[in-house]
Image 1 (cartoon, rainbow, N blue to C red):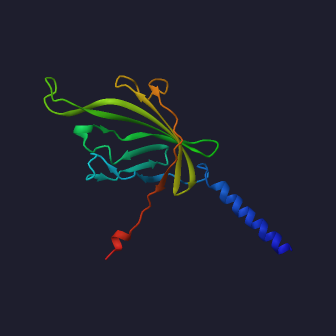
Image 2: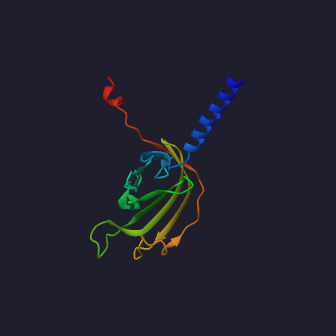
Image 3: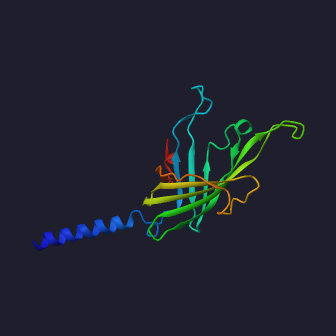
Length: 187
């Protein structure tokens, strides 16, 4: 009986500690590089050019954050492009992770009488705020996101200006990109 009681208490403690540790960015060393892959995209709509874009989110130990998207430079002269998202992150008291990033989109311009050749120009700036749940040290899930859009003449670092978009609760999973030497040791 004592043996079963001790075994049950040990299991409860291990399960409780594991549950408490998961989902809490205050208790995990979760910073690093995370990726997520978009579904294959037919950019031109003709069924022949299929692209698979990757989002990369880097959470540095100093609280800075960078997010890039491999789709941003595609067809920049015709469709425009976007800048790298840069910002910061912090842990909330409830163990959730908040990431705020600034970015910009550029639209094609010219050629015309003023611009002699095709180019791109600032279209809008953006302030993205994401809320993540830390699943474990190797996976985080974005559980909320909201975007604030700024005109080219507005300051994207000002959280009170611009136009606030709708709250999204679509969940998106990011997985840690881990170092692996298998390519170096392959035949």
